Length: 220
Image 1: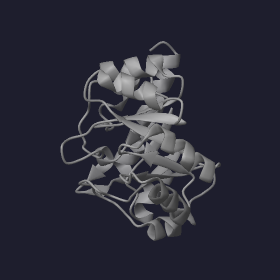
Image 2: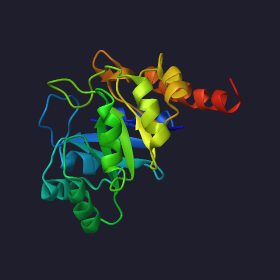
Image 3: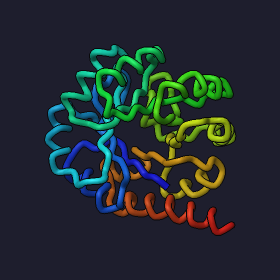
Image 4: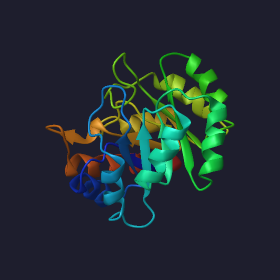
């Protein structure tokens, strides 16, 4: 089970995720909606210099203009881009042509079953989908779960990897994995304590996620 910790805003945050054995680390930049733990591309680039091998740095952004997205990736030195907001599918091809090494993840907000159609729309253009929750003010980092039954349907029909996000925490991630069977899971607010990424919660999340996969494979 791949695990991504999002909202990395400091070296302490980064070390928590590294110690938990994360596969990917999200840096929130280019914010247009309510968000927490966002950083600048320059701050991200500085942190990435200290990132060990085999952990993918992900630029997580609300930006929508193609040139802005390309510039953000270049300035931050991230190797993956998570597009939280609305972009034309054809523009993803423009980004890919400019940055051929880049892995592109498109957020799908699971508000109702229309998310299934939206996932299919972006499937030919993205490398993966991330299923998230949104509110009027926030398009990520809400701490609110969505309907995992819909998420499971999206996973079942998707030809590309699907990552589950939205309100996950150590206490519910195993159940979410059993229900949805995603390629990976993503967490931000669910591993915080007093507003800061917590080492114990971070370790517990990764442990629960990976144990859930082992139990599933063993028929548990």
